[in-house]
Image (cartoon, rainbow, N blue to C red):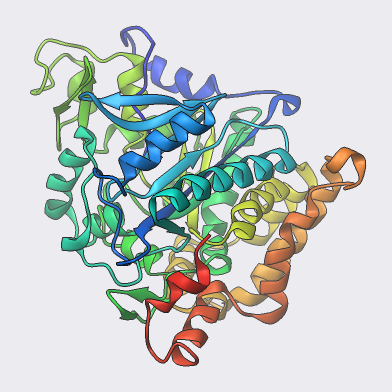
Length: 456
């Protein structure tokens, strides 16, 4: 989850909201890659989630990273709840999932080095306190009552609200993990093309990265339970966004959508003020019940944009949100997939050609089928395995066309970061398929074996 925003003066005209988004436009030479990933921490002896406090805890992890590796602490209410260094952040999800929000970097070689360095630091601290970390899309056997709650005001408000608007909200907050990538756009037209491709092809990412077949100790009937959770969470702020594909879509239309998403909070003086269900439109008029007479600042708008959770999200960049958390190779493969599809114009055009004739029903049906069946998904005549093969091939061509060298020139481009996905397409086996085979085979139905075999 995002940290509170800061800066920006009062909003005096609604046009400032679209201008805020438009300010993200950059020339291609300034486009960057920001990779985010979450993982579950657990106590090695009990296989229970790490609590916030104590000698073996999330707090001990953050303090260890601070003391051993030069991270600066981020605090709320006098408690350490995150870290920052060199443009990157380490933050906490509601149930203690540890998240790296990477710095904006020029190529995937750099972002993968960043991921590897972070995981090495995490392992160093975790080994010292008897903790482990694992990359999965959903907690394999923990129940809601097993989960700690991180001391962040935002999460208290969200937890209280989730039960009113959906059936799976607290599962998402406390018992799921994802890997995401944030990418830039050059103009409004470029944003529109990229966001349409991003939304339409998120089900492909869901299928390729499916890694959550377990929940509460048994098979759940889905390859990506995390994706299933998002379908019954809060209809006002999730989904496949059919309006993105309508004529005339642009920054102003996204503003209209965002203004209709009920608020969570307003952040003032280190405190989260309850604005649950209230209207940002009322806020613009100085009529917000939580803060009568006040008008919002641009940082309030930036905060509000972080409370919208569709499959792809627009801020001053585009967030790809469809993939389960997973093993380290896939933490690098996810940015490779989307950079290859969107940072080369020929690849972006080819990706759009794949999806431009789909209707909203097809896009939604693919989303649903991907969560259940992974690469074996099919909807309205579209076969996921065939589609994924084409998508990975387009991304491969896009990365080769980019030609960003690595390892001092020994690597001609970034395409090798797709190898994990190429193997998945070749074999038809996602991480979820592998986990199910192990569960039904040598694990003899014991989900907890995943910790020994799949931890970082």
